[in-house]
Image 1 (tube, rainbow, N blue to C red):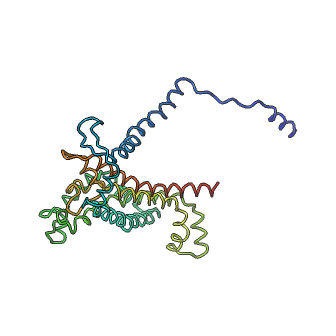
Image 2 (tube, one colour):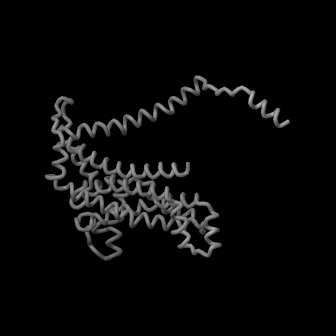
Image 3 (cartoon, helix red, strand yellow):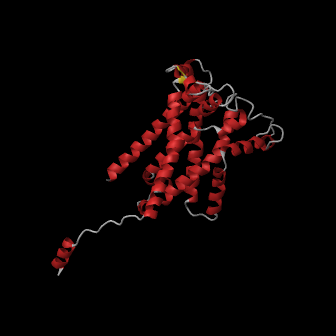
Length: 308
């Protein structure tokens, strides 16, 4: 009986794939073509044009024939005779280190606490995540009110008269605190999603072996969340590089708040625009971020290869 059933299955003609009808085919094509056009037009084309323009000198007035091609002069000028560049690199590195040490660790801690399904955890999740939905420009305005020298809440609490945004010795750290207020909830949500996906039997096995909560997290849970950690790494790097809105709202990226993103805007916006020079700065920023994205993709492909 079993053999006859197997013979019927072998002799059965292969099932034909259903072809999409005209309307369904149009929907599928539009879902592929339309996003591809947006990505090509709004991401890849500007990126390619930035690379091309970085080798030229152009103020944005006139047609393409007015571009003066200067080779690698823009890059050499950035590294040698452009004073804000190296301070901007240093500030971006400080931004990166601060996001790792502050909001990332705090967001992870909040995620671990809220993962216990404590009473009111939904409320706390919403409260901590609320700043994430605000734009960085709006965050800058909110903290500008808090940091106000005369009527700000911060000076009122500490009984001081510090010009938090105007003093070049403290304004970077003041902006970083505002950034942390927004960034912590984002990291918390990512780690909370990762913790929800961890197999519960791992915790049960660790409890049976007598491991404490701290030991279980760092020796079992944290290594299991390696893909989440890689995502957080890339997010923190990109956030530190694309930091622009906050410092632009404060003082357009000057007086101690020089960042690469702000330098790009300073050189491509305004009457004295230098599109070639600004494009070279943008390419440098893009190359730095590409290195970390490549490291992330390599780690992802390596994990998939091991699992396969």
